[in-house]
Image (cartoon, rainbow, N blue to C red; front, side, top):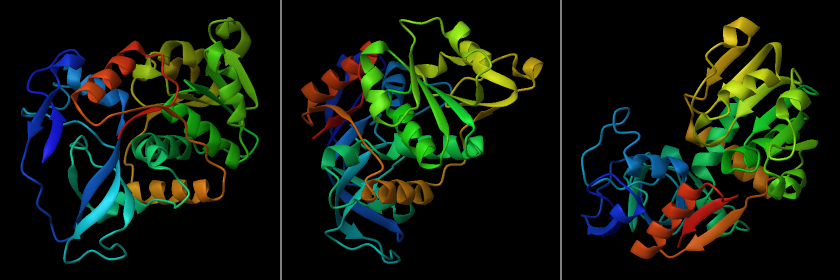
Length: 305
């Protein structure tokens, strides 16, 4: 089968089109023929070599943790799924391929009205956003500040929090103000127009840092009230204890729970998903997608199809 991977770390141009054997199934697995594939910032970190000490992998490396496609084979102990089902899958790696073998505990049936592009961009960021908001243990009418509110994780977190009755302040670039507002944020603060430290100091019961690479940690701590909570996808602030802030990272995420919730939220017309650009599933497409991620100027998901 065709896959898009790399045999050395570096810039987007290290990608190669490779031929690998079609994966084999375990008894609780399904084999999916990919119809669309989501690209994540994590994939770019993996490709650049940034993650090699944290997650050492053997070459060739085939990134990808967001796939939507048709089940073409099922293991002997798989229940609730059949050949022909179109499903959203969340593999830990290996998604940039024609076929993906994955546990049936890590998939959910695609809502009929959801496009392939929307579905391809949902699993990783949606699961992360769901468990970040859940970890925060927000109470109705508490204030949540989301750094990176226009990003793939942040935009979904805005919508999940609003569904729970939370007051949401989204931080984003001014060019994405209308987008974040349309997601339901009660306030949108543009980091390129306002002094965030003055505007947001001690405003939040919880801060969720969904900024790229966790670069907002030091600044975000200023926004949390004394005794509040700080949730990060990556880096935690160094001096949270001085402010008696409980700082936590997202972890222990169960795909079935999150994906089921997100699919139901979409069916209820309470989840809006944004596809930034759809590129072709080939060498040119994957290189172009990674170049766009490296520029960090994309609001919404990048998809290969």
